[in-house]
Every structure is written in C-alpha cells, then in structure tokens.
Length: 304
Image (cartoon, rainbow, N blue to C red; front, side):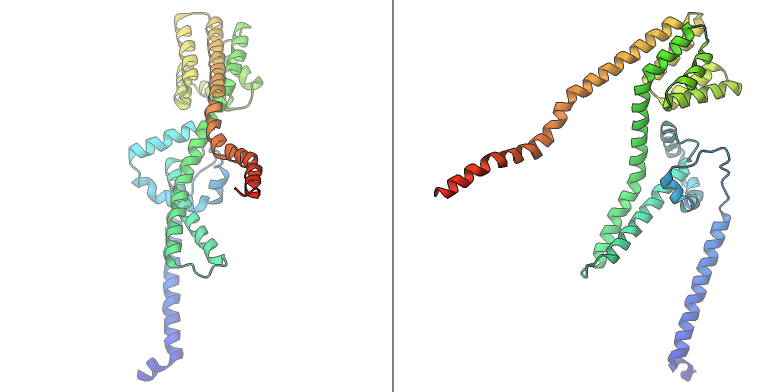
C-alpha cells in the first residue's frame, strides 16, 4: 500500500480517474436535465427576435425551470409589456425573464474573457469580480430597456400613421362600404405598420366568429392608445345607436390630425431647451477658446 501511495504515476492516475468520473457524472446529469425539457411547438408562433434566436437553447432551458417560480402579478405585467411590444406570439413571460438571466451570465462571461486576453499583467481577482458584476447587471437590464424602446417605437409609429389610416377608412365608409370592408381596404391599401397589423388581426378575429365590437375592444386593450380607444368607442356607439359612420369617422380623423400637429409644435418648442445643455457644455467652451486664445497669446508675448 505504501508503495502504491508513494508512486507518483499511481497518484496521478487516481486523480485523473476521479476527475474523469466527476466530469462524466456532471455530463450525465446535465444531459438528463436537458432531456426533461419538452420541445416547444412553434408551428403557429412568430420567430423570436435575432438576439433571442442566438441564445434560444439556454433561454428555453432556463425558462422551463423558472416559469413556475414567477408569481402571477409579475407574469401578467411581463405579458402586458410583450403584448404592447407586439411579441405575444414570439415570447412567453417565462422566456423573456429567462433571457434576462441568460443575458446576465453571457455578458459577465464575455467580459471575463475580454479581460483574460487583454495584454495587462496586473489584473487581479477583484477586477474580475467587479467587472463580472457590472457586466451581469448590464446583461440583466438590457432586455428590459430593449423592450421599453420597442414599445415606444411602436407607439410613435402608431401615432404617425393613425390619421392617414382613419382618413382612408372614412373615405371607404363614405363611398358605401361598412366598417369591416373599410378596414379591409385600409389593410390592402394602407401603409405597413402597427395599425395595419392590428386591423388584420381584427379582421381575422371577425372571420373566426367573434363579434366586431369585441374584436375592436381587444385591439384597444392591446394598443392602449387614447386615439385608438376614442376611435373604437365612437364606432361602437354609432353602430349601437344607428348613426351614420361617415361624419363620426371624419371627426375622429380630424381630431387625430390636429393632435399630430400639436405634438409636432410641442416637439419644436422643446428643441431649444434640449439644445441648451450641449450648447453650454460643448459649443460655448470651444467658441471661447477660439476667440480668446490669440488675445491670451498676445498678452503673454507683451509681458503680462
């Protein structure tokens, strides 16, 4: 026994055997965990965004285990944000939450890899720890920022195209079509964007057997825009009271166009205030340097 213990090759062989068995056990456990994750049926779903597709396998794996741990309030909040961003057929709240965890880990590992290949010799463990923490926080926050920016971009696009689409619907109604036929013409002839996709979804729901009023109310719940809500409310009330839709829609289109001009005037009035900070911090100092530098040089040359 002492000869076996004192033999270096035997000790190294035992250590290598133990490490190999540990690695094999970890691989077996990991493969068993992966095998327990069911495959998602995405036949009737839209493809996820590019960033999610690149990390889709770990996102799906993490989502399977953390989805039951998300409380109902948090689940409904994330689901509402995904609906407003137009991603309800791409991602589930569990998958979006999992993407934040996966993003934190991936960004932290990437920053550690960058530090390891940089030509710096004095990088200690503390630097790796702090860098990983900051990178992980950024990887956790970025998906939420991206989702918020997507919601804001969709809202801007909706407000931009809403008056034109309402004009198109109004012309079709005044030409003799009903509201459903007018929306079909807006889908066929109108600009591509959020409102066109929502009208397509309303028409699809109506063809599936849902009532028109319910389909329009579901559209307002998805968009959460006061202009769309006012349009849908006016259409439903006009149909319930037997009123002509042409004047009602014309008033709605004029109101939305006036609101768009008011938003443009507001943005124009806010521009000088927004330019004040970069003007004071960046432009004025450079201007003063250009103006006073020759004067200072002349004073210094004259002995002052």
